[in-house]
Length: 109
Image (cartoon, rainbow, N blue to C red; front, side):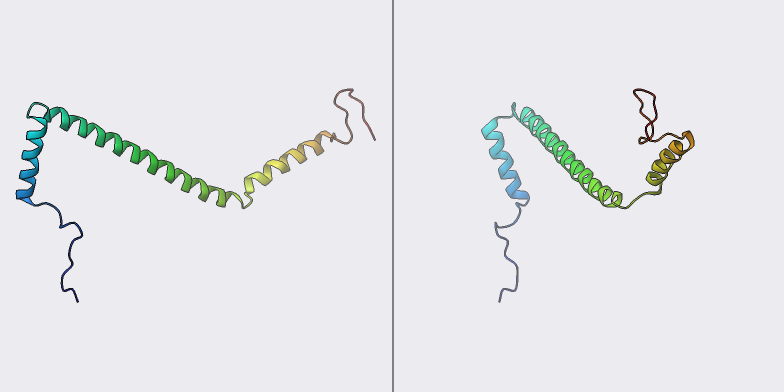
């Protein structure tokens, strides 16, 4: 049907259109205010870029956190040895929570 694609808004402005737009801007704002306008536009673009990077970094941290949570659901060998060491320490000292009263220092059977 359509042999060519028709742009929705007529396409991007070319060379002559950009010159006309720049002339209109100079007439509206004046030549003296253009450096201030360009500076404030650059600062605004910099702030926008910084905000975008912060959001992307937060999203990446959230993705990394979800991946870390999925990996931490599996038991790790280091966690098992730490609880085993505590049990071994109690067995070597001969005291457990059932047999020793720490406040009075007396044994209960």
